[in-house]
Image (cartoon, rainbow, N blue to C red; front, side):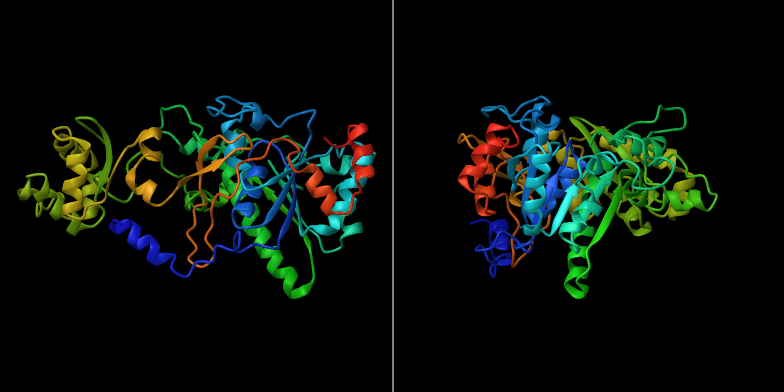
Length: 417
């Protein structure tokens, strides 16, 4: 057993593996599409909640269909669906039909949370809005994730991740300099943040209901979530200070940025004056350690182009591994700029079990993203792969009191599959 395994075992020495997670007993009825809603449901499922996702068998969610499909899966499993719907159960139920709505409302008392991310008014048109649900379960927790929220001038608009990135100022800020075209993040950043806020607010609402007995409607917008996570840059704007386009360098540290080396790139730099002195000696330029032009951080920021060039010239002579090893020895922050393939196969990432195997319904083993937090008493883990459409329909309805005859009739009419 290596050192990392010993440390891991020590961390989890008091773990309980008889529970799916700390949210065991919480039940979520999810009616979502694409990413923000499914991501929210996935976080709750990762924490141990029983998340049942309602899908339309006739109209598969786009996340199932977008390529590339993961190798060996049958039926083909889209990478988005596999990532966002693990640890959930699936029921194929058409709530657009009156009979489907009746099934939905009959199921509702079994759940603590309803989660949806359709355009404002869609759930109401199906008779499944927050107001409708409150008639059945007055203290229901109802999470609505939309592009622009349940009120405001833009609330009626359809809203997707790129729109939130654009409206929030993120795209405008995400460029190397003023002359570059604004750039969308390669991830669904607004969806991810909205999903996280939805999950956190759900846990807070559960706590509130435990104390007061009160449920509530939670309104999460992609735009709000993205603007809230702007690292203070939009606070500058709100105060009338135009944020500066910085790009790769850290605005309050120099040298910093991405530097080319023999076999790729590293992100490196220094913040403290003491770090500069160490770095100067590390790169073979000890005379610069106490040079008055560079010995304090304000001076280095004023001379950013020069100090970046000094570090850049040293990096060009070395490999990534050599640079990382030297910086580690001298306690200077550094990181290899990894490709996606390099990142998922990194030994530290593997030691942290950031990706772990699960088996699909046909026995294919997939390596999926694991829950990020490590909880010593109630470990979070991948318990099940994303289900096929309607995989648990009979199981769920039977447990909720629907007889075999009722299920057969619903199946004949196409309400369930």
